[in-house]
Amino acid sequence: MTTTNVDILVIGAGPTGLGAATRLHQKGHQDWLLIDAFSEAGGLACTDVTPEGFLFDMGGHVIFSHFDYFDQLLDKAVGTGEENWAVHERVSYVRMKNRWVPYPFQNNICSLPLEDQVSCINGLIEAKVANALARSPPANFDEWILRVMGEGIANVFMRPYNYKVWAVPTTKMQCSWLGERVATANVAKVVENVLRNKTESGWGPNAVFRFPQEGGTGAIWKKVAKLLPAEKQQYNKRVVSIDAPGHSVTLSDGSVIKYNKLISTLSLDILLTWLGRRDLAERLTYSSTHIIGLGLRGQNPHDTKCWLYYPEDDCPFYRCTVFSHYAKKNVPADDVLLPTLRHGDGSAPEDAAPRPGPYWSLMFEVSENATYKPVNLDTIVEETIQGAINTQMISSRDEIVSVYSIRLEHGYPTPSLERDAVLDVALPWLKKDFDIWSRGRFGSYKYEVANQDHSLMIGVEAVDNILHGTKEFTLLYPSLTNEGGAKNVDLVFDR
Image (cartoon, rainbow, N blue to C red; front, top):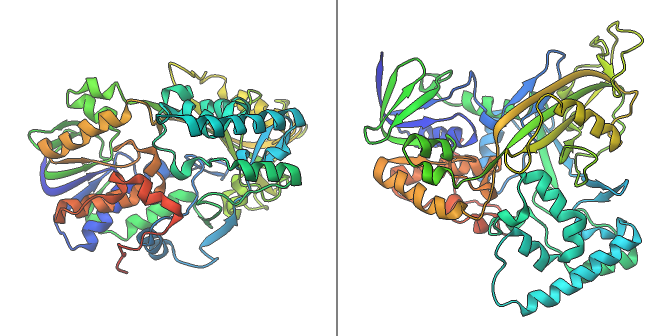
């Protein structure tokens, strides 16, 4: 058994861990080490490749940013210009009532059948009056929906869709996380849009986004890792236990790493359980995510659609991304010969001989929670394919040439009613008593600052806190971080 000593140990080479390592390297701090259980960098922002050559991310990741530092780092790692980045305008819809409703739904109810328009407008007006008379803030996400949008929009879209995303009822979720994550509804604008039969689709920070031309989202983080000294990165190193009082971790190969400070991106519920605080861990809630990818032969029939939302029960997925639209190299080249595995309806191809493309692809996301929304692993892929037919994403005769599926145990950190009370105890306790900075999408469990840009900056700011005692702005002030889509220019990546 070997023992290594290091000043600052970083566990996890996803965006948060790489942000921390980048900042340590930038600051000239010499005594640090980054470890990860997998064979390469990326974490939950990695990209898989099927045997047939189709790329699939671990969810609907796109690049938009609240931080100059993040933009500068990615430009340094990946490069700039259209040879490295594809830039897209978001084209998103909600699929319901056998039609496409432009996103965000609450601004575009003019696209609904007349009876639903009436129900939604009545609910909005009633909600505006009720909210004006309310004497206390909403107690949960469900109450927030009713206060802001009313019963009509709640029943038609917000309740069913959010249940499909979070896999828990909206009554079990808090509402302090919302910010720019959920568009509110302007009653006057909604009524005007209905009367004018006008749609609006430009809301939100990701109305324009970029995506790497090659290698998927995972390529970004592998290139960020290449900016760092190779000798300070160790992969295939899985942590199996942490001796917090002794400031050491034990790896699966029996080796031990002793540290003075630890930045951990391990899921907080797992870390707390290891350290004997199951009472806190069990009060945190998360959902698992199933990623199902389909590689198809033919031309993409969905024009410039990017990602699409599904509140109804005619499909198991809550979101579908037309992944081939993001970058041509997300699918094999047209001249690659591939056999048809099956048609959409499951029937065998008339000819199993390999044939050329062109090719296109779809990526579906399905949520799971053991208590509220279980998923059958044996049938979820077939249910997804049938759902794709039901929602007209594919036809029964489309040629499927590649099928991908993976289950991510930790998919979404749920902003549950108890979350903040746990974080208010756990994060300061870990830092004060054990010199552990638990940070990242699941390390700090704050979905509202869990995009790739947020996650990277949380790692950067954790290092600044360790080295200089500065406040961790992104972690502590999510609402201000996201406010108005303003770009944070305080930190600069020194190229």
